[in-house]
Length: 368
Ligand SMILES: *Cc1c(COP(=O)(O)O)cnc(C)c1O
Image (cartoon, rainbow, N blue to C red; front, side):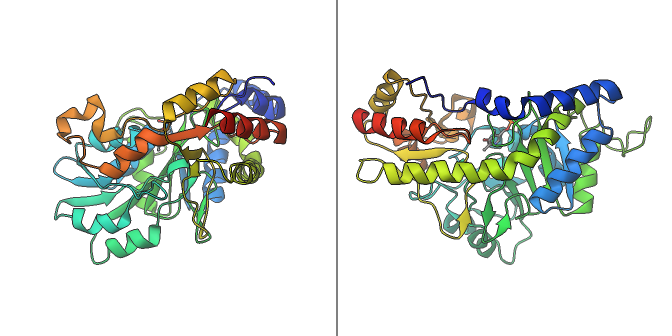
């Protein structure tokens, strides 16, 4: 059996490589390297995919989240609530606005933001909550809505792992006032480099993101800069490559669900518990995450058998050295900290064969 990586982009390119190359050629022919028709076409198509009125592409997912928060006017003196069980970019984006980060722990079953803890975390300074649809499964958005009832607090989704996911039939990316997506190559929809997007149904937020990503210029303006922005634009080559891949995304998501279901069946009876999947949500199955005792030994055992297991993430954000200044001691968010010690991500990509899935499951049984 060959090696099985966590994500196999080579397998994906066997399928879509020609379409991506054609898209890159089209940009080279057009000489519109920033913005232009291919970028606008992708923005429109991605917004439609998400069921939002606007899609605005950005340099990456981190800047997308930052820009969504900035577009809402969030800055120094404000508080933004999120969960420490995430990739640290979520927290970097909040911090870059100048706002303070307020953490609430995750739930033990699904490792998603514990919305029951949100109400107590809201203060007069709270301006936004950033729910992270971790591993592709949406946060309990109705629970979050209840927690925020009677407040003016905005919900900005971190949908970086959740392209195509749904919550009670509604797509991730249209569940709050705005959402941030990442097109990092390993994400469910990946560019050939970095990329990101904000989706929103709010015209003012969309315009603000467009301006802030392009030096504060209104679309079409050349010399007048109305706001203090920055350069967070996306290369047209990336937008075109994404446009070539987008038509495959629904089929890829379906195939991911099948891979996950085959794992579910193969892992019955093993001492490995998958993070809980809610029946009212369709995950994008970005990652297949299980919890095992003696995790590091299991990861080593899988590696010996040629399997690239991952850990997302071994250090909760509040315990990262980079955020030591926030002053959260060990034990501050015990559910996230406990999960960080026993989670493990198995290889999951749409091109995975049944034989590969069975091989991983068998290797996991041996390693356990
Ligand atoms: C990938 C990711 C990001 C950041 O996206 P980049 O495109 O890498 O900047 C943010 N949040 C989460 C949860 C992610 O997984």
